[in-house]
Image (cartoon, rainbow, N blue to C red; front, top):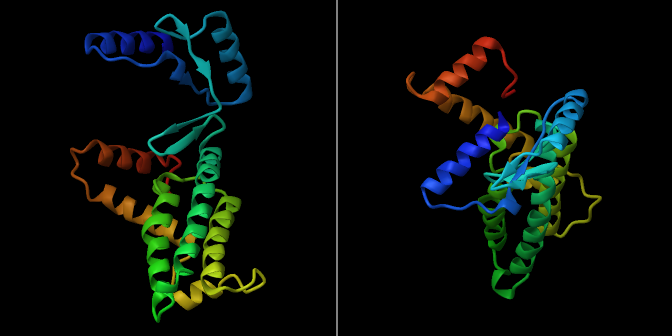
Length: 215
């Protein structure tokens, strides 16, 4: 089945005079260990090929801004956060460098730093969080530690300062609540779609069958 799909993709690409770099093609295997071992044995005997070149297996791969991991949804969120945390932390220190400029040492200067964090850093960090249906408590904790780091740097307070302090002072929303808000907004958007829309039909079918999804 998978090889037949690859053959169709290859035919379509040739028909449209397009190319896909074979070395950048990969496949992910998702499921329980017993089934995965069986599938890997089958692939070892009959490798998946594109343009007559074997396609390698990967544990994770970036897709539409998120990372898909072969260990499931929760691990995919963890991998996505691992990739984004570094950029977010670097951005926080860059914001700190901006507010330390003498031109920012005015009344209300910190508002600019908060705006940059909330309008640039957080959207990058929480992109597609509506689909994080199995985010772990550890991942939420790490996200909120980044939020705490930003406010500690902004107000020049030590790490021993009570963690909710920055949120209290600025009236910010905790990361966990921001994720919940986005999920609820997305759920409402799906409910308000027309009955002819595929997204609405999938949403209603998942609800009817009580499939795992947004919590």
